[in-house]
Length: 109
Image (cartoon, rainbow, N blue to C red; front, side, top):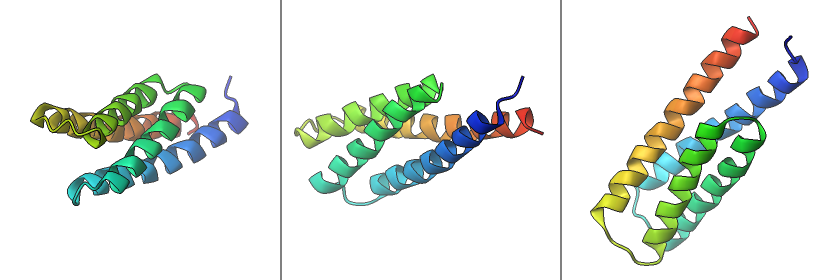
């Protein structure tokens, strides 16, 4: 049984998540000021909570890792491994959003 109202809410969430993930990725391509990293952590925090609410555990877990890494960098931890992990989790987040959108569109077709 397909719940069309829930699917529409998920579609809206995923569209917003896609936009936030683009902003996060864009932030990583620029100079990483403390304000930019705070914004990145904030966006990741929003995705972490909402992802779980809509049943997207991987979106939530990737976002949690992004949030943690950004907070560590803001605190002054300048470890190349953190930045590599941050990039990896952003790529994972974007891939999971694409996968979820594709799955949702096939389920409602």
